[in-house]
Length: 67
Image (cartoon, rainbow, N blue to C red; front, side, top):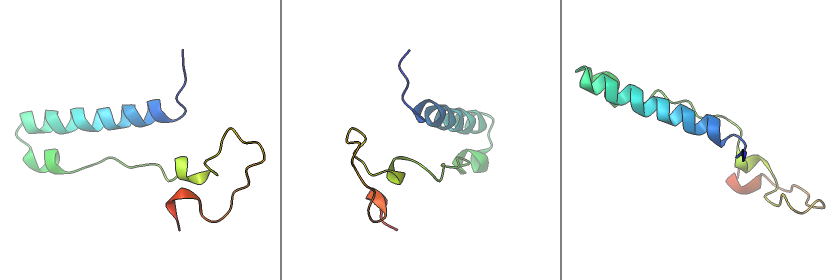
């Protein structure tokens, strides 16, 4: 089985949020359906140098996201 790093966890969290929202809408709770309860992780692809194949890559600055 191929691994995609943290993507499966992220995809499961977003899928759960979509199901929760649709179920709330079907139950008539429009306020809950409109509310987003997804908490995104603080870390991710922006934490690295961006050159994972280059062992000599040195992280400089703040990465791809800025500060």
